[in-house]
Length: 286
Image (cartoon, rainbow, N blue to C red; front, side, top):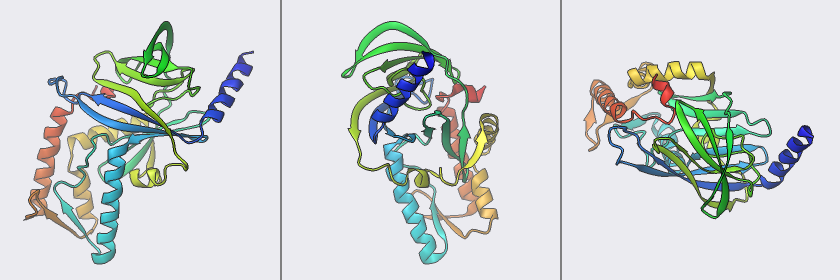
């Protein structure tokens, strides 16, 4: 009977997952000392029969434009013109999450330094489903809780949408997660819109580096993350040492030396690290 139930759920998932786009509003507090400063970003969960992709709409658009610009520079001059503002986009959420169906293997796509990484996260989410129900948007949802990433989470899922998926890495409930928040309300995802798209999102892997990302596990990811956090100019130094022809400019467009660029990058990154002390996966800093 249990196997039959799982089979029916799988069939329902595959039947429903026909190029659906779920738009989530992500509210997050980056600096735990300034909880009144809440950022918002629109995230897409694109679902097809083969899996899902979760990413920032703003970052995708911005990075697509930047990649096209760099390709044009290299083709025309053989070099890149690097600004001190390079890497700053209209969006702040740089991570992406890909899940495959029907096994729900979960991959965290991120860039650290000059390299993109594809991190397999096989940690199991253990849910406690509760009887509480409430309306979230236009859906009747049921409550569930879990502990993961150094935080306690409360999720609301709806069986009206028979998908065992959700924002970020969250998955495994008998219906789509329409809202999830941590105990401090520092990180909140809430479904805002549901649409269809005719074709699978084109170029998401290419723009975000998922197609050429280095495959690593969680332990390796944490090590590299800490190294790059402690040495934020590491990637720039590596690029300079590789023989790539580069010119540097400050925010006003004035030329600057490589040493000045490194000092500015280190100063800026260290200031950002102090402010960015409330990561979604807070256990990375422990």
